[in-house]
Image (tube, rainbow, N blue to C red; front, side, top):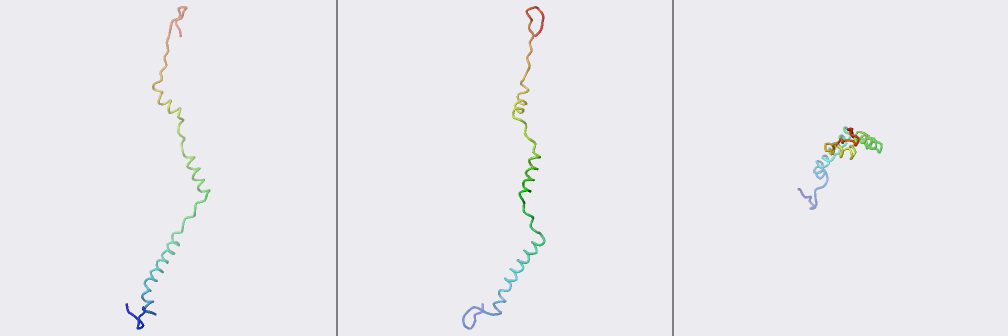
Length: 96
């Protein structure tokens, strides 16, 4: 770093020459952001109607679960038996 005759920091064109790479880098970064936004525009924001439509679609595609009583019946069904008996009738005929 060179010092001026008066003992202060460098001034004028030399100072601008030292700052040029930083200014150029910032300008290139800003240009890259602008070009990126032009090439890839932001998607449109969701509206309440979009959300409602998606929720309705998801709810319509869900198959409801079977009733709890149906699940219990399926679990107990193998244990259920029917017992039939025949006993003689007092008049001597068979029947139930």
